[in-house]
Length: 199
Ligand SMILES: [Zn+2]
Image (tube, rainbow, N blue to C red; front, side, top):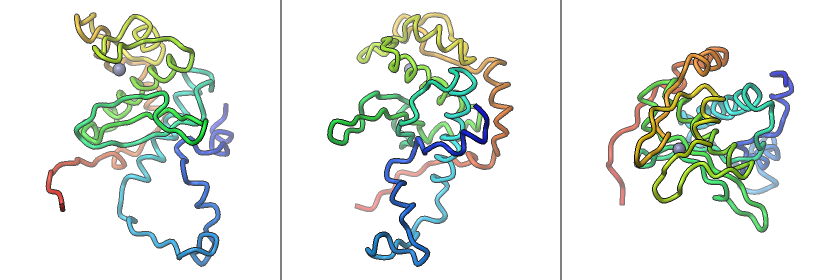
C-alpha cells in the first residue's frame, strides 16, 4: 500500500472526528454553538495523528495492511502501562479496540514510544486472529506473543516466570522501520509530571 493511499483512508483514531467535517467556515457545527478551539497549544492531537500514521505504516510493513482500520488510539496518564483491550469501546452493537500509550514513555523519546506501540500492536494482531497471547490476570506473555513480536522486530528477553516473554526491546529490524518513518523527534519530546489537581 502506498503512502498516498494510506493518507486517503478514513481515520483510525477518528472517533468523533467525523463531526469536524461538518464544521463550516464560520466555526458553526450544524448551526450549533460556534466551535472554539480551547486547546490549541496541546501537543496531544499532533501526537495522536503521528501515532495513527505510525500504526498504518507498521500495519503495511509487517502485516500487509491486514490490521483493523478501526481502533481507538490513545495517550493515557502516567499511572497506566501501555495496553490493548479488544472491546473497550461500544456503541450499540458496535465494538472497538483500544490501544493506549502511557505518557510516561515520552521521556524515553521516539524509540520508547515506538517500542510500546509495537508491543501493543502484537497484542492487537493476536486478538484479531483469536490467538490468546497473554493471561489477563497474571500478564504472562506466552510463545504466541513472542513469535509475533519477532515478526515486528521486537526481541523478547528470556522467559520470565511471571511475565513470560513480556519484556520486549527493539531490534535492528524495528529500528530500520522506525528510521523509514522519519518521525520528527520534537513531536514526542515532552515529559509529563506533576500531580497537582484542582478539586
Ligand atoms: Zn503485553
